[in-house]
Amino acid sequence: MAVWLWSKKDNHYTLLLGLVSVLFGFRNTMGAPVESRDFDPWWTHPCTGVVHLRHARSGRSRVEIEFKILNNNMQNTWEKMQALYQQQQVQSNMRSKCPRMNLVLALLNNRTKKGNFRRQANHIFYQSVVELSKFVNQVKQIPINTEGKLNLEKRRDIYDDIELNLRSFLCTYNESISRMRVPPNMPTKKISNLLSTRCLPKSMDLTRAQMFDYDLIKKLKRFFNQSSKKLDKIKKKNRTWKKQELRKKQEMSKRKEMRKKQDMQNHVSNFNHRNNKRTNLKKDKKVRQTIVF
Image 1 (cartoon, one colour):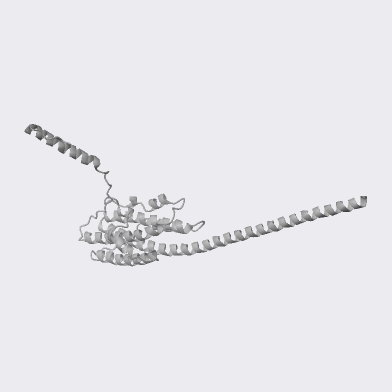
Image 2: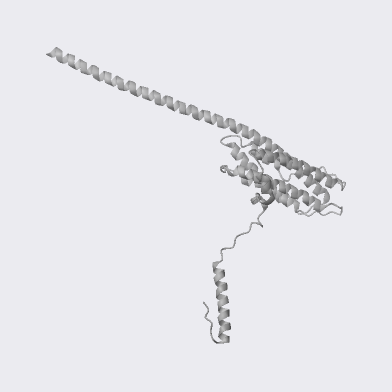
């Protein structure tokens, strides 16, 4: 604590020292800096802001509802993208192998062999949507070199809508999948390689941009449509698998009970047999004794 002195010069020094000590004391009492999530990509924490409000009104079958909403929105997005390029009178029927969605869909089919394959399929699907979100974000940022009057802001708005829909879907799916344990041998690396952004060009002309935009939205529509059917099919198969497992357990428990009963009966019969044998031996002994006397 600073002490006030009679000298004016000393008082200035004392006041300065007091302020420095207060500042250093305040700095020492401050907590550690909190890392802001504003710079994190949105797919790492999708349940924030306005998306969370949309998610809050979901019911019990929220994933099925979100699938329908997403499929409808993808159709609207496709129509908007077509209208954008129809103004430029550019036609491109080329297809791109970037990203390789068919192989990702094949991974979902391979999860129907053993064990709780529904859990495996759900984690594969969720990881695929995360990688697709990264891909869409990267495509949106590719510069387009064109002398035409392509409305780049409108194109960016379309991709913003796609990201918003994916974000809402991830938020909805995140809660349902968080209850499941991560299955062993998850092909996370394989999914990230199949949906890698390394195949994307650094820049595009108008024709190539149309090819990528058309092809990507078609693939997204097909991916979510096919995934919805596959996951529903896997869900039904998983129910039958669970019923079969339950029947096996019930049969095993019945067999154990039957074995216990059989063992008990054998034990009782053996016990009775021994007792009968002992009583017979005693009778024989008495008979022999009477004969001797």
